[in-house]
Length: 167
Length: 132
Image (tube, rainbow over all chains, first blue to last red; front, top):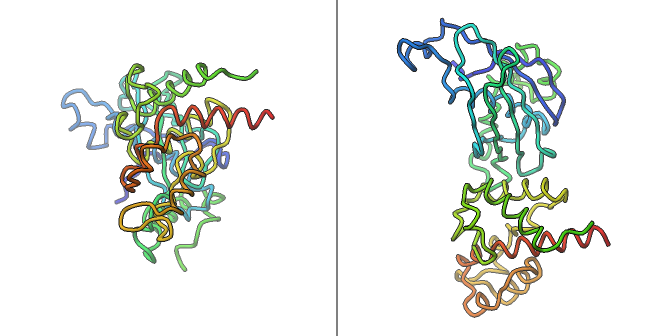
């Protein structure tokens, strides 16, 4: 199983912004366990969803060759609960541009037009900040499974630039 | 219109408060970014992003916080900067006050040179340079 907390990309402007959707369902086990008797989607998983939306946005700029690491949650403010049946819209925007060292992201999450959260994240490119941690091991962030997933999820244009998992 | 040093200081303060979660009054000119304000490695990148946005400037990699002096044998021996290393550091950090550091140039004390005042000086020269 891969830890994926967004369902689909609906907008994608390379190096600038990305929009992803996530449908919250009562079939998801964590909704029952997080606050028993009051099923809400945990804010931590919304941060993860934003990190995934933004992580793909940042990774795409260098064709998924860089190991894009969530380095810092600069800010995360939540305004309302997210309940089963809600559809979340993750909008991630690059502040300035993606640099060789990493990128800063401003994100908002909305549900049916209502503001759910404001999140700022900082990503670092691991090999640019220090010695490569696993030389020759390939990219453990955007690994084969992940690239395959991008292809499956109608992100063909996006994934076509990435190294093929079959080679 | 050129910003005064005080105006630059205000914006630098705002960037550091946001990046490091410190109180405004902690951000004094003498405060060390690491030692006093608690910045860790990734925070330096965050600071660079915020300064670029606040002042609409470009800060090339290693320009504000030099990052590759320590990896050279030519510049560092036995945990201290060589004369060559010191000269390089002076050239790379023209806005830092090295007078004390020079007397005992321990590599581990380099981070103490990164002060709020140094950042303000860097931004000031950057803004002046781009206008001129």
